[in-house]
Amino acid sequence: MIAFKFLFKIIVLLVIIALKEGLGSEMLETWIDQSAFFRSLLNFGIFWLSLNVVIRLTQYIYRKRKKLGHKYSDNVIIGLRNIYYLLTVMASFFLMIGMFGLHPKELLTALSIVAAALAIISKELVMDVICGINFSFSRDIAIGDYVKINDKEGRVHDLNIHKIVLSNNNQLINIPNSSAYFSDIINYSSKENFCLNMELDLPVSVVNKRQQLDLIIQKASRDLVPEMLINEIQIHLSKLTKDTVSLSIDFNFKHADKSISLPKLKDKILLEVLKMMDVSK
Image 1 (cartoon, rainbow, N blue to C red):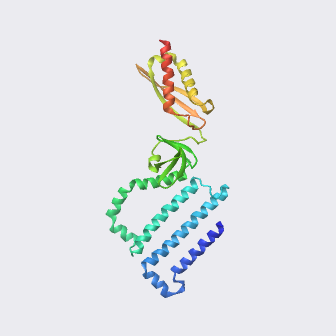
Image 2 (image 1 turned 90 degrees about the vertical axis):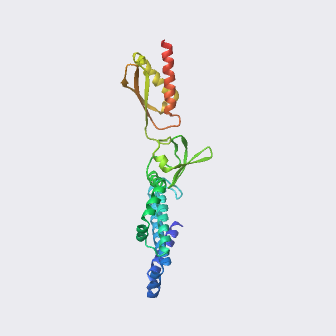
């Protein structure tokens, strides 16, 4: 069925190319050259069919090499789909202006001021498209991952050219690609090591209880985060003043998980340190 679709598209493409060349008839060729509408329509058909065949063929070969199902989509498949949509929209724009006998170069020159204004107005949309293509080919997130973007979290339902769609409790959350790109993203489905750093300011009096303090920080962290997720916790003295001591705590986890929350870790550690200080009074 897939092979038949490819063959059909190629046949239609060859027919359109032959039609544009006039099918050997000088009269038909002259009429096509004089008809801006029909010439633009044929150019669009050739471009769109060629693009469709190339993108679909690339996706087919990629799925075969990766041994993926026909309906399976990963970031590469989505990225190719987004490029296809973007180029199709651009081609549709040139089709419309070509139907009125306008050449793109002449139109852009005549409307340079309007084009500049439109570029400023549509800056966010353009940024969303660029960031969307970047997300499509990156390994940061993929469909099916459970992620947290700023204060929004959920499973990635869709990655398209304009936004990321999260699904959480049967609700769909739309996040513009540009907003997500410049935000902190936590991927709880990531299988790679996950590291966090915490800066903790405490009274200078705790320096004399450094060994006890390290044990409390280790215990408080393991009470909040499952032991199986923790690779290592390193505690360093980063700054010492007359009244305060600053600790830098590096957390190295086996992978990201919903139970890992830097604010909660900080609150838990501070609570346990305060308990230690009250006991020592």
